[in-house]
Length: 181
Ligand code: FNR
Image 1 (cartoon, protein in one colour):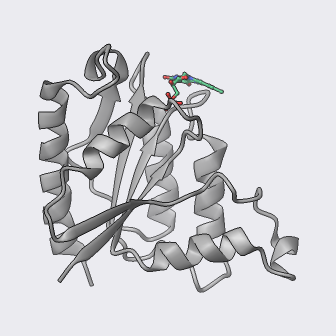
Image 2: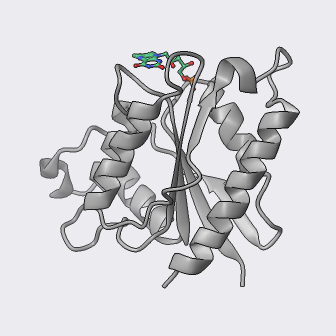
């Protein structure tokens, strides 16, 4: 049976390095996987008061997330943490109480940065929230991408890094099969 994976990218900008890596990764799953990108840039900053009248983008996001069998986060690091876009998506997805999109769905978390420690602190901050969300998060292999080496001047992921992303995709498929309800 076809499995569905939803990818959330923490950078909203057009020429994002994270988007380049996420798009490459999305192509490396077997043919019986459908991998799609879930929009998070249109979600208003979470405010419980908005739930009274409902918010179209909150509803759209929650519905799309629930249709997925697994999730992938690809994140930049902003000031040694996850970007607000992803924390907001985690918060929106966790409500209404009792209807969270997170429990039981296998998750892969990857980070991409052209500098420093490849977004490792953002990566682990996401894992921390997902532990609370009761999501099984793949512990190994870890996905930290140094974009200064992994993306060439042509704007494409270099072959060695495509090979590494293939290992990640294969490992995540095995993780999904082991952890799916
Ligand atoms: C950054 N950047 C950054 N990089 C990093 O490795 N650690 C960090 O803490 C930060 N902090 C940070 C804060 C803010 C507000 C911005 C805009 C940027 C640099 C960041 O890694 C770089 O801009 C990436 O290119 C962002 O990812 P995308 O947009 O290319 O996917």
